[in-house]
Image (cartoon, helix red, strand yellow):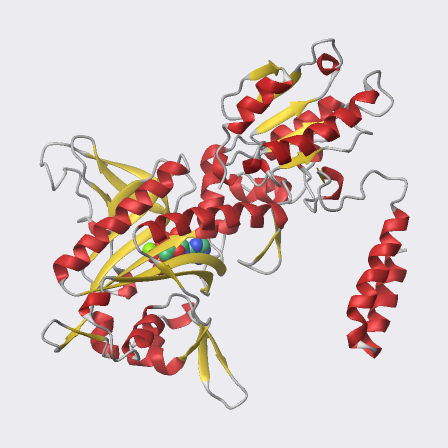
Amino acid sequence: MEAVLWLCCRKLLAHQPRALTQHTRCLSSCAGSALKSSPARSVGTSPLLVSRLFQPSTLREVQELGMEGRAGEIPCKSQRLMLQAGLIHPSNPGCYYYLPATVRAMEKLVRLIDQEMQGIGGQKLDMPSLCAAELWRRSERWDLMGKELFRLRDRHGAEYCLGPTHEEAVTELLASQGTLSYRQLPLLLYQVTRKFRDEPKPRFGLLRGREFYMKDMYSFDTSEEAAHLTYQAVCQAYARLFARLGLRCVQVQADTGNIGGKLSHEFQLPAEIGEDRLLICGNCTFSANVETVEPGKTDCPQCHKGTLAESKGIEVGHTFYLGTKYSHIFNAFYHNDQNKPVLAEMGCFGLGVTRILAAAIEVFSTEDAVRWPGLLAPYQVCVLPPKKGSKTEELAGLAEELCHSLGTSVPRLKGEVVLDDRTQLTIGKRFKDAGRLGYPYVIVVGKSAAEEQPRFEVCCQQSGETLFLSREGLMDLLSEVETV
Ligand code: ATP
Ligand code: MG
């Protein structure tokens, strides 16, 4: 049936491109009739149904049947769990489909990032991914980047690369605004876009891709001191962001790599799978990427008392003070209070958006259950109605109504509640699924909801507690849930 519909749709499109809306209508009405007997005709305010979510999970099969599937052999926990939980699907090396639940989590992360970046005055823009070779030749990075750049030519033979970062582009943009005044600085411009890097070893799922999302911010200041203040403000915003995610992040001194510049820090999440090696002093605040420390050194260069302990980390953010390296090349001036042109002092600040998602899963999850930072969970609440044919079957309506009223009377939960309508499965099976997918709150509408004073069983993932709450108690608990 689906195949027939698809064929009919292709024919329609091939001959009459303008019939698209007509066809869409036909498709949905056909689909509607096919689902007539099912409660799954969710439109408008109906609850989101698990049976309709495109999240092809194999977590249960892997556990229960001891499946030796390919994903089961992957040593990187976040990569394996994300594949098994239907969060990502591989396409080609270092490239993944981000499935709907991942996109929801990523949108939440981006909203948090927006809040923090705009909180320090950041303004969001969006720069082209196709970057002219000419710009990259001017900074000499066209050659310096070597094989890491994805290069291509247009129909006229002009050369481009797919942007791996945007120092050149943003500085050129600024330089083209001849009238910038010191009164407009500091200027903080940022974007959240796909970046392309032909990594030698793409691996570990979203931790090291060849195509990934990055938040990159570029700052322009009037002086070195002002640029340092901006630098501190961004580091503090990063620290707040990671704290809100519940992630323990270490800020370490770092190498400036091919970006260049004078001062640099990485934000590292301690984890065994991490590809960076960190040295952390047991006595003072000193922490560094091993790359920046003299080889073999074990005593702390800051306090000279403590010893340096090595651990592994995942780099989730990177900050650079660039000075005038790029403003000099691209002539990015501002006019000072005497109306004289002065080179802008720059900084650049990256956050690995998709890497943060995977890294959070890496540090929070167990071997067989996904755990999210509360704020990023794709859905906050999963409601489980009783099994079809069971004694409490008549509570199905109550479960559905509960979903509806949660979504309407707790505004923050709008769109955050799903109903696991796969009632051919026992509550126990669906409860396990919900646990493995990591919904922060799982509500069972079972036996105790049929009692004279109905009680809902609520499993709070983060605290591990199970509570039996009245409807009011449940509403009170869930109205405290923070969402973004
Ligand atoms: P790495 O040392 O891990 O290769 P980098 O130092 O080259 O990273 P930056 O240029 O500092 O990366 O990029 C800013 C941020 O983008 C990094 O801190 C990281 O979180 C993220 N990032 C970089 N490369 C990748 C990648 N291949 N896949 C996913 N995220 C990445
Ligand atoms: Mg880096």
